[in-house]
Length: 430
Figure (cartoon, rainbow, N blue to C red):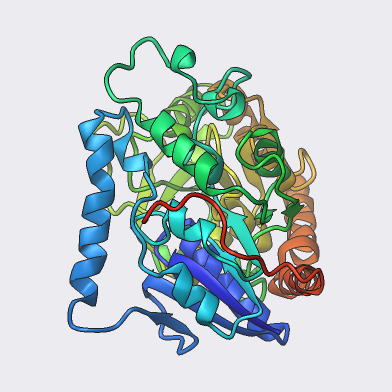
C-alpha cells in the first residue's frame, strides 16, 4: 500500500508535527508512505515540497493572498481565518500520483483549496486538526447550540455586531457547492468527531477517531534531577510547567485563566512558597505578566529533547485551554509521566483521566484549575501513581506503533472499498 500525506508543513505548529509523526509511524508500520508539504522543516527524504526558482516566492504569495478576504471583510479574527482559495498542489497532480490513498492534514495558508479538494478522485481521508473543514473559514469557532457552523450560514443568523461582507457565509457556501460527495474523516478526539457529525457540511462523511501519534520512546520518563539541571531549576522546588502559544491574545488558549489560577495558587495554597513555574515557548515575560506569581523560568522555544527535559523536570503540566482538540503538550507530558491539569472541555477528557492521570477542572474556572495544581503537588506518593498511570495510558493509546497500525488498517479498509471517484462538485477554478 502506498499513501501520500498532504500538509502545509511537517513541523512548526501542532498540526504539522502531528502529520509528520504519522508519516513516521506509517513507515514504521510497513506502509510505503510519502509526504508533500509547502514548508519543510525535517531532513526526511520522504518529505517533498515544490521546487523551482519561484517556489519560495509562490509560497509567500499564497499566504498573502489568503489573508486578503478577511482583511477586506474586517473579520474579527483574521489571523485565525482561511478562505481556502489557493493551492500549492493540484488535484490533477495528486490524482496522477502512484498513491493508493491520500491523507490530507492541515490545508490552510494556501496549501490546498476548497475546489482542489473537490477534484481529488483517489480514496481520500482528511485528518482534522481543527474545525476549519466544517466552518465558514474559522479554524476554531464557538461550540454553542446556535453556532452557525451547526445551524447553517444564513442571512438571518449573523451576529448583530458584524456588518458588511458576510465572508463566513461565502466560504461555507463554496464548500457546500464543491463538496458534493462524502470522504472519510479522522479526528484525534471524540469531541471533534461529534462536531463534524453535527455539521451540515460533513454530516454524511464517515468519521473515525484515532489519536495523534507520540514517539513514546523519545517522550519517556527520565531522572527529574538531570532534567532540572539543564534549566538551572531548584531540585527541591514544586515545578509547574506550561507551554504558551505564540499569540497570547488568543482567548481559546486560556492565558488569562492561567494567570488567575497562578495568582490564586500563590494566595491560597499551602505549598505555594515552594512552587516555581517553567514556561515553554517564550524566552521572556510578556509585558502584561503580573507581579506576585511564582518564580518563573522562561525556557523559550524547545526542540523535542528540550520538551522531554521540561516535562520530566515538571511535577505537574498545566494546559489551560478553553477549547482544544488534542493538544500535544498534554499527550507528550503524559507520555513522559508528568500529570496534567486542564479544564474538562472539548477534546481534553480523551487524554486526561480525572484523578487518575491528572486533574480536570470545571471549564473556565481558574479557582478549580488552581485546586487541581495544588491537589497534584500536595502528595508525592499520589503524584508518583498519577505519573505511572499516565505513562501506561500513553503507551497503550497513542504510541506511534499503536497509531500507525490503526491508520494502516483504516487505509486498507477504505482502499478495499474501491472508493476511487470521478471528479464532482462545482467547476470553480480554485
